[in-house]
Amino acid sequence: MLDQDPAGQGPAEADPAPDGSAPARLTPAKGRPTPKRSEAEKRRRQPYVPPGDRKAATQQGRTKDRAERGRRNEAMRRGEEWALPRKDQGKVKALARDYVDSRRSISEFYLVGVLVLLVLLFVPGLRQTPVINYAVLAILLVVVGEGWYTGRKVQRLAQQRYPGESVRGVRMYTALRNTQFRKMRMPPPKVKLGTKI
Figure 1 (cartoon, rainbow, N blue to C red):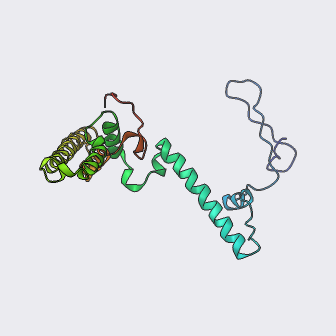
Figure 2: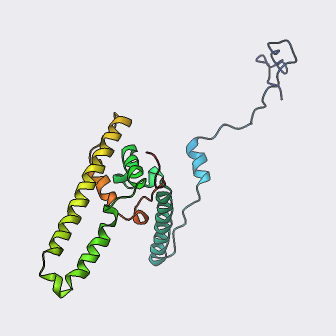
């Protein structure tokens, strides 16, 4: 469809193409104004239909919350940044997680050691000996020492790779993740054991 000439005396001629070929076709008018964004969004959204009673409203709210939680948990398992808790967000925390998850540590199995010690406490002959005390001290020294060493290494690595980012709290974050079983860590590990970080 051709546009009207400004003088109103018939259709206006399309401007010839710059290379001298046939004139380009003009886009026909829609015949209606472009809708505002708010109007388009209103039409796209489904209208809210209030439930008949309070019980149905409560049930509807719970269902919606459950679906939202499920969606968020799935996204968190995939490691998507928006779904992570605030304490796990950021490039520095991601680096700490990857560093811890790429290697085995003794601290990872400290819970097993604690359970063994609890069992040994019920052995009558060992209860009076200093063996239990030394074992508890040894476990504590290993967990604290390894946590300090790993946290310091991650902090230095983060300062090198992300100079402008804050490294506050990353040492404690690294040490705590270091004491968890690999399969029980949240967010789940994204790197394999032995991966170079």
